[in-house]
Amino acid sequence: MIIVLVAGVSPLSAAERTADAAIKAGLAWLAEHQIKEGPDTGAWQTSRPQYQPAMAGFAGLAFLANGYQPGQGEYGQVIDRAMEFVMGSMDAEGYLGQGDPSGMYIHAICTLFGLSYLGASPDPEREGELAKWCRRSLKVIIDAQAIPRPATAQGGWRYTPYTTESDLSVTSWQMLVLHAARQCGYRTDPSVTDAALAYINRAYTEVEPKHSATNDGVSKEAGLQQKEPAAGFVYRPGVSVKPEPSATGVAVFIKSLFEKEADDKVRQSLAFLRQFPPSWGGRQYGGYYYFALFYISQGMFQVGGETWGDYRDSVTEILIDQQNGDGSWPFPPDNRPQSRLTGDCYPTSLAVLVLSLEKQYLPMYQRQKSFF
Picture 1 (cartoon, one colour):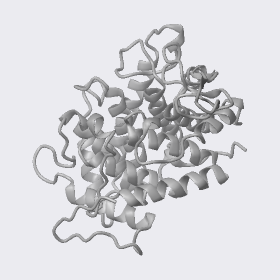
Picture 2 (spheres, one colour):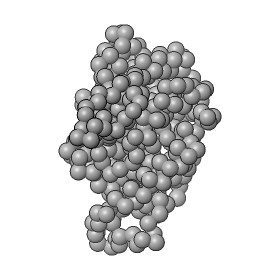
Picture 3 (cartoon, rainbow, N blue to C red):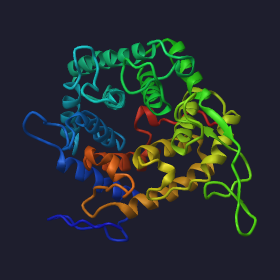
């Protein structure tokens, strides 16, 4: 366990090391470190300013995911300041990711925060402004999907609103937004989500393991003993070859939100995901630990039952064990090089969001009909 002592803050004792206590400490850290004066009021410190809207979105979602309301109670002002900063980040075209080459991630995260905040503010005028703001943001997503693409990329999204490429990760964030929008009463043409689901389903593949003989004659593939094909989802249909845990987890999640029944793709994918139990970093996360953990956890949560229960217990223990003494979370060593520019708000917010899944306060968390 990593312990960082800060003046006035004591590390959690063994008795206090529960998920609720970890969440409480994480939210307290986020509130304490929000910028409260100057042009960046409502944001959190990052080494790359373009990331600030997304970090404010993640942090705001972390508070909303635990039942805290805008303008009310202990963290009402924190949530309001974050929303004010995010709303002010939109450009004249309705885009929130300007200045960053992967801006559609930022756009989706900020829009999710706006949709999750919507309906909770006690100020009717502010609610009306936010409803229009969300509609403008949704239009960017819908228009971006309509950009002509090659057949293998049709229906998806990637890093910018104007690209002709797609990938499963960015596509899943846009689908999360469309799901949350649906929960909030917005209506979009079903062809938008139908096309995106078709893209996601094209990402499914089954790969026969390549076996190599070992000294004892046992056949192994990439260090993992496998007797069955690796069946799951690839990051980019038509480009990627092998299924990846994070892509598979988020595909299961999105399919559970938009499809009525589990299909063989989901069943085979769960068998694939069981090869990768939760850990503190590792190859299965592709160097992006918190994003991948967020994806896989939500997939497991939507499946529910013992699949979720076993996964939840393991991931909760890991996150509690790795939390810093001041309430924040660090990066695993194999993730820090890729994500350090986001600042400490990012891992702390994502850890809180993963630990808060079962509370289902957020529109994007609300479990749909059981697949099984």
